[in-house]
Length: 320
Image (cartoon, rainbow, N blue to C red; front, side, top):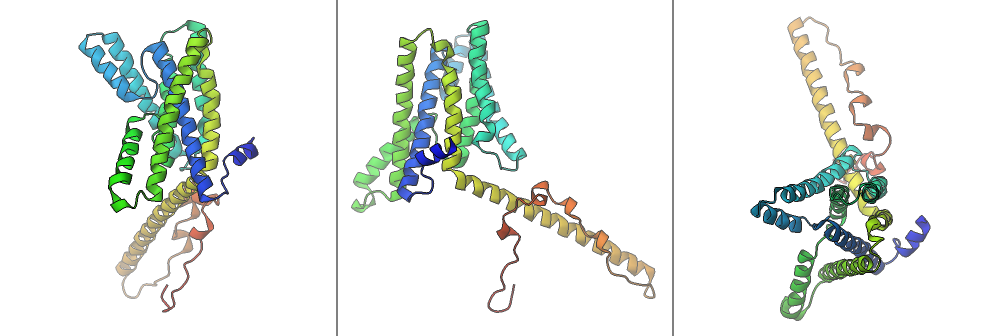
């Protein structure tokens, strides 16, 4: 399976191939999100991923004094952001070494739990909490790495419209740069596939109404495949994030060790001064220096890239 996905997403191909790989990954996510939003809206009258819509529903329910509905919409919004914080917390706990596949089983269980609750208890609507929790983390993961929003189309359509205007009337007839064109293509692709997911799920619900009660099982499988493909396409970005985290840990450990050494050195010097000029002055003992135990665990298990451990080369003028 990994080789098949690597063949689909030609990660070692040309820059043009890389752009198409990124486009396919984001379109996959947008289609999945569009599908999920139809299911949540048809079943529960709210959205599993779009908190702007839920905020409008919350305000309307509060204005009409429908406090049960207002509480429901508020809980969904709150749980969505709890899901975001949970993912970020897991990422920090793992030293920014987390990837999509590390959290895929958790999200798979959440989506399956949604359908299981419907099968066991019927539509109570609060099973939507599992969906909000899962998409809060998934959307955070997507934005953290690629900075592309796949769970809404307003901003994406704005970028497309601005790109068309800039191409026609700005840049003195030179058109868009390659980066601007790629951004516009991403935004357009995400918008189209999001709407395609909406239309496909709407047709599914209309045609197979008795199966729509288990509509999140396909989402559970699809999100696992999406997270897998996301890790493959953005492998270099994930490695860079890990290297940046380890470099920051090394800098913090070096600063702490230097501070500890300086403190011990000054304390020893003061004791020698109090002993008088005739006292015996010995050098600092090695056991006073910070040991490897004072360094973070990430730096003790050999995860630091080699370039961070090699001494810098001396400059030509003899300085280091």
